[in-house]
Length: 158
Image (tube, rainbow, N blue to C red; front, side):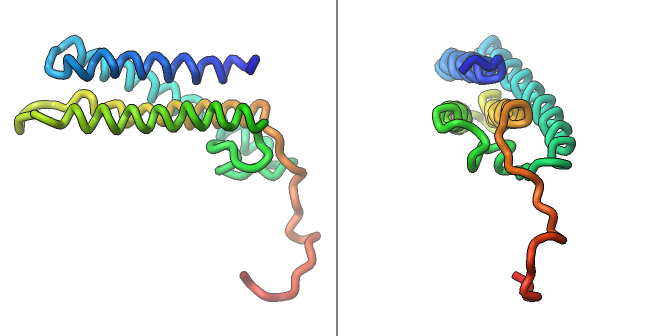
């Protein structure tokens, strides 16, 4: 686990969990709403940036390797070692669960004109997806590119 990307994913997830743990009990206080929104938007922006970088790297890599979108962003197949796959998938799952729970709690007791600031947490799983993609684009394992013209076909589609 020597990758800075894995540590960034871990620390980002911890910051999100702590921010939501602080914001949920004080959901109607302005400071808690600002905390939830700022942490969520910053992590979302980092996730978008890392996803775009990973996608650009994967396009270049796909010239010589078979890179699938699921391999890149969800670490499926032999892309990552099992330990790392479990860790990063667990962090992504934690982000999803915390976001949904916080958003659900945030909506309770709201009047019609109030904002559910905790709902911004649903943006955060983009951070986990981006970290997965960045790791896979940099360190992932992919097979050689398969040339469709060189594979035998029986003439049937599907």
